[in-house]
Image 1 (cartoon, one colour):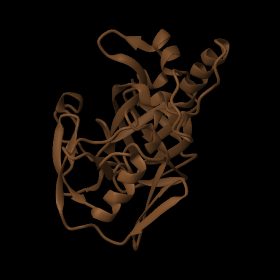
Image 2 (tube, helix red, strand yellow; image 1 turned 45 degrees about the horizontal axis):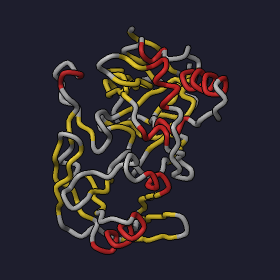
Image 3 (tube, one colour; image 1 turned 135 degrees about the vertical axis):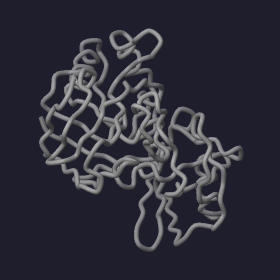
Image 4 (tube, one colour; image 1 turned 135 degrees about the horizontal axis):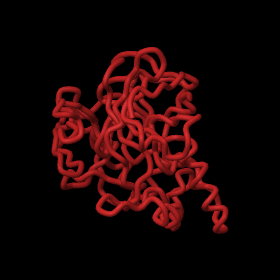
Length: 270
């Protein structure tokens, strides 16, 4: 078993960045979901209601950040200095507002008022302790956990079912994982609790990921269809939990280490 691919999502709901390596931190892969767009009430924006966000690319460099949406681009050197309350599900934290110029750029393209905010290192959210053995696990603007892990074989099985029913196969980016592992059986991630990646990185697979309409957003175009959620519902729906695909995870060991595509994966506990 090995790491097939890695991805970070600098902007929650924004375009994925496929990477060959990434530093592992307690909050997730370095740079993952540090930014979020919020409305006037501070509630986070999602592809559920704004599927076009899939095409919004955010990159961070030494001189600031750049936003690119289609042919439109904006570079900004520094944040505004203001703080804004950000609500992600049941959590509310303070975050750094990136200012009026960014607000106008994103709002014009999205068709509604949105503000770009960056997580403060000193104000992370925390995973529900029911899933961490009461340990304090920080993360930023991901839905509920620092990492999302999926077996490549899980997608291959789904695509077999889609094609059998006359539908086009889908890419793994529909599910927005951080770590894709190859060499398992389909949905092996459901049966495994602890894995080692590379020499010393250890993850706890803590909770199945319940899927929503975001899986029906074609990430390259922002177009929305009915699949693959309908097909997934036919064999991956669990009473009281929803439609499950992939496992949420958190870090047990290896903070600061570099995880690379091709690194070996070892099962430590089931």
